[in-house]
Length: 104
Image (cartoon, helix red, strand yellow):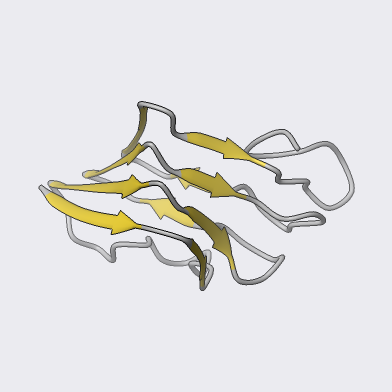
């Protein structure tokens, strides 16, 4: 298991639609934890893209979307996404219709 601790507010580059956040590696579990907030750096994509054989655990962390975003905060394309403790996905509004990946 791999742990990443987040403190403070961190702007993260979006993951291109053709890739997973953690590459093509399979059978991996990554825990993102901490008291901070992760936000995508632009309004046209996903903060996290979870691929085949990948598990991402968000623990006590805020995943903050953006207004007028072109995608969801978390996109799961074959793996798993688990929220624990006080983790929340919020504040994402999809361009055009409705919101994906959290309510404001």
